Amino acid sequence: MNCKRNLMLTIGVLIISMYGYAQDTLRITLPQAEKQFLEHNLYLLAEKYNISKAQAEVVQMKLFPNPNLKLEGSVYNPNNNRFADIGNTSGQYAIAAEQLILLAGKRNKQVKLARTASSMAEDRFFDLLRTLSFTLRSNFYKAHYQQNTLAALQQQISTLETLQTTYHGLQAKGIVSGKDAVRVTSLLYNLRAEHTSLLNECHDMQSELQLLLHRQNTWYVTEVTAEPVSLRRTDLQTLLDTALLTRQDLRLAQHALQYSEQNYRLQKAMAVPDLTVGAMFDKRSNYIDNASLLNVAMDLPFFHRNQGNIKAARVDIAQQKLLLEQQAAVVENEVRTVYAQALNTEKAVFAIDPGFRLQLEILLQNMGEHLLKKEVSLLEFTDFYDSYKENILRLNNMQNDRMQAIEKLNYVIGKNLLNNEAN
Image (cartoon, rainbow, N blue to C red; front, side, top):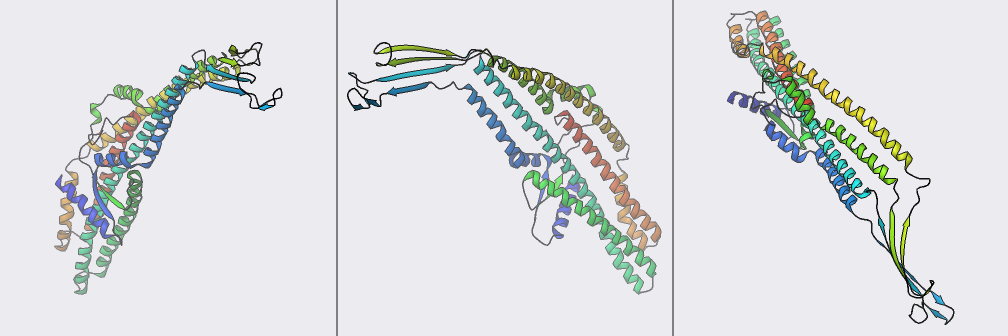
C-alpha cells in the first residue's frame, strides 16, 4: 500500500513539474470524491430544485378554493338626488357570498396526482445521480490506471535518459557505435511521444473530474484503497431482483403508469359539475325589502362531459403499461449482458500471474546494468523495453477494464453492490 501511495505522489510531483503555472494537486480516494460530488455537483444541485417545485405543487393542490364576496350599492338615487345612497331609509345595497365546492373527490384526486408527480421528480433526480455517479466512478478508475501507466512510462524515460547520456559519452570515446547511440535516442523519443499522448488523455480525464467535482485548477491523484468484490460471489438472479427494485428509471416508469391511472380517475371526476353555494342580503331591490336569499348553482352536463380528456387518459394508461413492460425488459437485458461481460473480464484478469508485474519491474531495474556490462545486447535491451511497455499497458488496461465492467454492472443494477470502496 505504501508503494502505491509513493507512486501516486510521484505522479503528482511529475504533473506539477510539467506545468508552467500553479495548480493544486489533490490525492483523493473514491469515498472522498463521492462526498465532494454530492455536495458540489451543479447538475445535482439544480435537479434538486425540481423536487422542491413538485412538493410545492402538492401544497398548492391541497388548498381549497377561496370564497367570493360581492358588494353592491347605489351610485345615484334620483328620487332624493343623492349619490351613494346606501342608507337604511331610502338607499339600496346588497351583499353576497359564494363558495365553490368541488364534487366527485376532485381535490383529493388532484393531491394524489401531485404527489405522484413529486415522486417522479425524485425518480428523475436519483436516476441522474445514478448516471453521474457512474460517470464519476468510471472516470476515477480510468484516471487511476492512466496515472499508473504514466508513472511506468516516466520510469522508463528516466532510465533511458541516463542511458542516453552514458552512451553519448561512450560514443565520444569510441567505445560504442553511433548507430547504437541513435537507437537508444530513438527509443527515448518514442517513449516521450507516447508519454505526451497519454498525458493529454489524462488532461481530458482530469477536466471531466473537475467538472463533476466542481473544483477547477486541480489535478486529482486518485487512490484505490480496496479490491472489488469478486463476481464469483454473486448470483445473477439476485442482481436481477435488486435491479428491478432499485433502478430509478424503472421506478419512474412505474410512477408514470400510476400517474396516468390517477389522471384517468381525475378526468372522469372532472365530468361531474362542481357546486356553487352562496347567500345574499338585498336591502330593497328584490321582491321585498331586506331580502335574505340562498343561491345554489351547477353547470348542466348536456354537451361538455370531458369526453376527450377521459379518452386521452385511457389511451395514456395503455401506452404507459407498454412502456413499463419495455423498461423492465431493458433492465433485465442490461443486467444479463453486462454481468456476462464482467465475468469474462474478471476471468481474464484472474488468469494473470500475480507476480508477473513484479518480475517485469525487477527486470527493468537490472536491464540497464546488464546492457552496460554487455551481458545483454542492445537489440535484446530494446526488445525488452518494448515488451515491458506493452505488458504494463496491457496489465493496466485489463485492470481498468475489470473496474469499468464492475462499475457498469453496479450502474445497471442501480446500486453499488460490487465495490468495497464506497456504497
